[in-house]
Amino acid sequence: MGAHREMPRGTLRLTASVNYGTAVVAPALADFLRRHPGVHAELVLDDGISDLIGDRFDMAIRGGPLRDSGLHA
Image 1 (cartoon, rainbow, N blue to C red):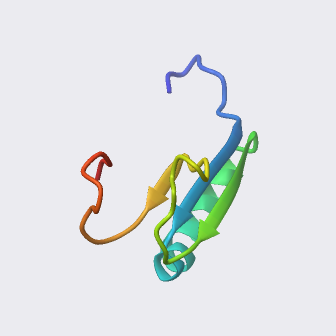
Image 2: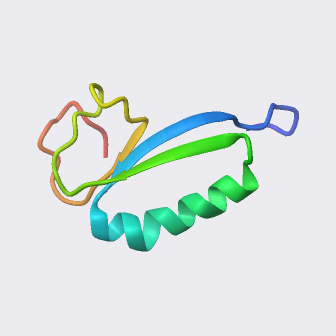
């Protein structure tokens, strides 16, 4: 974002694996939300395979090989 842009706002919906999400994503997300009060977040911690489109996730954080070559790492 440039210096003359609006502050980010809206809802960010993301998913991560339980262990990584608890240890890394949640603390980083908390810091991000403190710096950007206009943003709200929904963090779903789940070790299963998520339907990113159907579940309306903006971002997924997972480790391991990609099962779908249409996804970006």
